[in-house]
Length: 215
Image 1 (cartoon, rainbow, N blue to C red):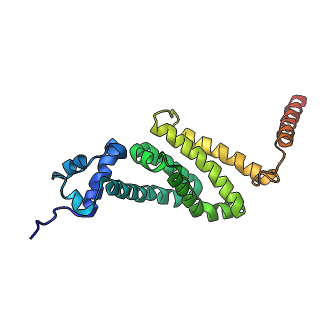
Image 2 (image 1 turned 30 degrees about the horizontal axis):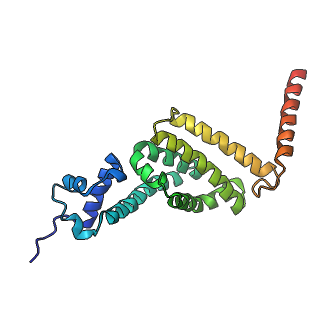
Image 3 (image 1 turned 120 degrees about the vertical axis):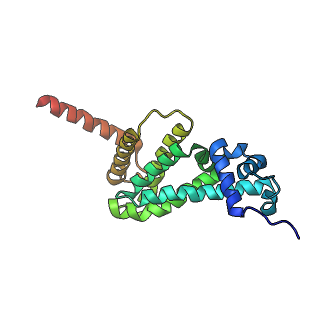
């Protein structure tokens, strides 16, 4: 009779996830996982045929872990802002898992993650800002790119902004995108005349300055 396996698959995956959180998924080895469990590498290969399978399981576990952050954000009073700030919090608190999920060499999983989040928030944006589905998706895409950029700066050690400052950045960008969607015909479709719109904007600014000077 073969010896009883001491650890379950879930326990091995959790140990591997803990190693990935500390060292990064690319640096994770079976020896690291076994050392955390206090056993040889043999139990690992009772459930997994290769390290590639272990990494795939860790990626899935990291996605589940991230979804807890996303769910907390979506439950806030302003779901899209809550989601964005939780995404950034995930980057601060779990930089190695953020690298794994969102800074992969393969861009496809990152875009898929963005589109999944987009689908979760679409209806909220439609009702909150009275947007069409296409407008809501456009808005979310642009906001997500800003959130992802800030998160990347955090993970790579290049972000000097506090959460309060980041909230201000997101609010300002959100206001600009919303105004463009509402006030510039063809903005979402990309059919508007860019030069004409910028010229109009500059003229309005000049008029406001002039009006202020007159007073």
